[in-house]
Each structure stands twice: as C-alpha cells, then as structure tokens.
Image: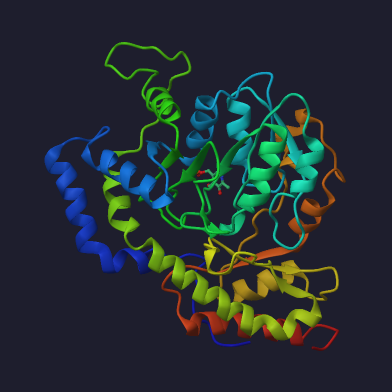
Length: 385
Ligand SMILES: Cc1ncc(COP(=O)(O)O)c(C=O)c1O
C-alpha cells in the first residue's frame, strides 16, 4: 500500500483559513455591538439566505432539527396527521415529525440515488396524510416536478428537508423553494456550516414565517406577551449568523469545487464499475450539491466494505457510512412497529454504501490517493478487474 498521507473526511480549515480575517472581523463587530440575541446579523443573514434560496422569508433557529420541528408546527402539522418520509434519512427528520406529535409513515428509497421512492410515497398516502418530507439526500434534490405533481394530486403539503442541500438545484428549481416551507441545517460540516449549531426555516408564506418567529422565541413576538402555546427557545445565534453571512458569498464556489471533485471521483472509479463498485447516480448535473460523495459496493462487488474502510483507515484516509441503520431499525423507534424486511432497498443500501472524503479545498493529489488505495484493495480481491 502507498505511504501514509492523511485525508480527512471533511477539513473545515480549508474553508476558514482564507476567510480568517473576515470571520474575525464579523465576530468582533457582534461583540462590539453586543446584540447577541436576534441581532443585526441574524436579520441580515435571514434575508440573504432566503434570497439565495429564491424565497421571501427565512427564520433562523437553533438547529436543523428545530427547523424541521418548528417549521412543521408552523405549517399546521400535528397530532392526528400522517407525515410521509424516507426511511434512509438522518434521524433528525423523524425526530421533527415525532416532536410535533404527528405519525411518521416511512417509505423506501431508490437504489441508485438513495432518494425517496415517490411511487412508494404515493402508495402510502391515506386520507390522514398531511405532508410529505422529501430529503435532498447527499446534496441531490428529489425531482421538484414529480414532487409537486404528487402533492397537487393528493393535496398534501411538501416540507423539504434541505439540511444537506444548500445551493442544490434540479429542473431549474432551487432547494428550499419547492415546499410550503423547508428546513436547513448549518451544522459545521454542512455545505454552508456555522461554527456551532444553527438552522433555518425558509418559506414563501408570511404567515408561516411569523409563526416560526414566534415559536422560536417562547411563543411571543412582543416581549412578555405570549400568544403561541407551542413556543420554545431556539434562535439562530447572532455570532453564528455573522459567520454564515461571510460564508454564504462563497457557497456557490464551494459547491462548484464539490462538483469538480465528484467528477474526478466518477472518472477515476469508472474502471471499477464492471466490478460492482458504483457511485450513487446524479440526475441533477451540476445542480447536485455533493454534500457527500457516496459509492455503492453492490452485491456483485467482491470488495468487503468493512475491509475497505479498514484499509483506507490504515492509510490515514477517513470514510463514513450515511447511514448504517435505517430509521425503522433504530432501537429508539421500535415502538413504531416496523420490522427487518419492511424497506428492502434502504436495508440493502445501508449495507452497501460508503462515503468518501469530500470537501471544498480537497486536492487532486488527495483524491488520487483515495482512489489508489481503493484500486489496490480491489486488485487484492479474488476476482480481478
Ligand atoms: C437530512 C438531515 N436532516 C436534518 C438534520 C439535522 O440538522 P441539525 O444537526 O442541525 O439539527 C441533518 C443534519 O445533521 C440532516 O443531515
């Protein structure tokens, strides 16, 4: 195997180092103003990010999970409602549904993209279905046209989980602009990440934005007058908003770099396609935001995933699995009464997928090193390429 050159899964210093002075100046100006809670930077960043998504309103909250919860609540989703969501999502999508007291209805996903299977979603619709949550997994949007047609036909709300898809686009439509409302996360490693937790609900509807504004602030829009019983304390921090404001102007360039890296991975890994090692399929061209670059070691592939991860780790290359256990098999949610075998595609994918290092600023040399190690592992497998 090649000599060791560390390749982290994500390296935020590549983003932050060139912006260091701007970031420090932004943080200092918040400290000088002292408007730590719902300050000027929050107001400015909310508007800037809403504009970026092509919608009217943005309301900054404490995390992506809270954006899901408060956003769904503001859309009127609650007890008695069924909400359709893909089973192969990060658990926060499910937590959002459970926190508003609605009933989650899982559906399976597409094998090639990992995105929600909309035919399965359509079959799952009942008279109690209130909303569908498309998760723009790995940075690729669920088809806006197909989604809108499904939602219009069955009169259900679309609520986008766009936590992994800042700046993603498909069919000329931007992530965050398809649904009645959408949730974003600014967790540090996201395409647009803060230096801590943060999230936002974006929407075209004034009334929804006003409700989230109230819910995030103890159910009140006027100090010490509380009108919304479901209120909590979940505000985007002013310091985080100041950081995000600086970073937003670089998001398109970073997403371009992610696309460049994805194309290089696609090219370099092509010789392994006949060997059953396939990248997840991109149906959105450069509109894919490549939050993650995910490959599949299909049932035809003789490479053992655990062994590959171990070989990569031995060569100082980090990798990940997003996600190893679909939501319906998580111990915490056994009360939902799903079983092994209920979602065969998601279950299969959870055994096959592997996320390779991907972040703006990753060098060609690093990428070639990752591919070199994968090739070396493949060459040592019983079936030759
Ligand atoms: C698809 C998805 N939904 C929701 C979340 C929750 O976001 P947060 O971690 O900011 O609560 C995340 C990220 O962590 C995510 O990847």
